[in-house]
Length: 312
Image (cartoon, rainbow, N blue to C red; front, side, top):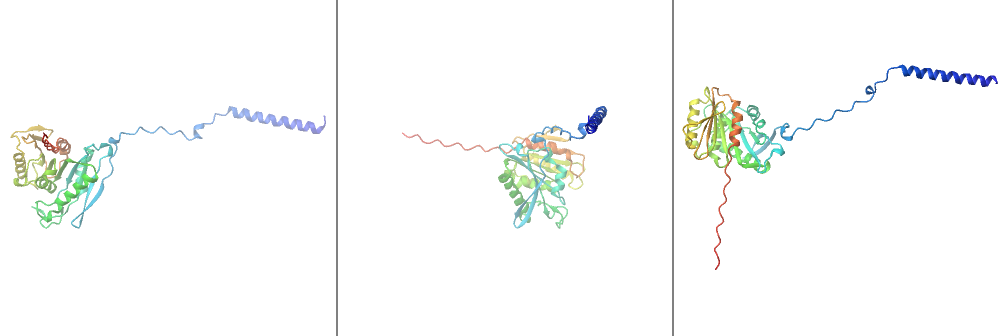
């Protein structure tokens, strides 16, 4: 065998031995963790919650022009899945003197307990007060009919028309509440817009008995230690409401602070009285929602069609 052939033979043999040695060493190493090289598979997505339990959409600001003045309100709309075939109930919540729509929304937060409702938080203008702020330096609402050109009553009319036309509101389930000056305006709506309301729930407010012109289901919220709207005045208002609504002399207990007076004309009065002050008492919100849900305007019965004369 020639020297060149022997050299090539020994080189090939050496190379094979080296490869075998390297493979043996690799076999003794620990296995490579593949999960450190390959991205992990994502966990399965959580099961979606039902639509009704998801967070409601943020409040949106809506605006109206009333006699050349821009008015606005915060509006919370129900999720589409919660809208009844007859439409959604509509609730107006009016802030007190010097207050604001966002502030009263935080106080009530009523849409969290009534997600099926359209909740409207209107913003008041600087308005002269009945007892304080006679110069009208603070925001508020008209206390009587036929003052400040009835601008707040017309504002209410415009908002209601929009909610009925554009937001699938139910015309037979329209409600109003408000605190202090806002409660007084709710009492004014009882007087001036009785025919479009199903029930009202003023808080910390008082009006003259003559204001309550027709029976209407009502809830009054008050604090015995109210130093702004004296509780004696509120008691007189509650008495006038019970008389107007032809209520029983004795009531029945409802919840922690409520007394419900039955009515012979289907206009009961619920009073929710605590030992609180003029500050809004949030314990009333749940019973308020229950009270509103229990009342709607009766659907008018269509007049019978007159019988046609029999031809002979």
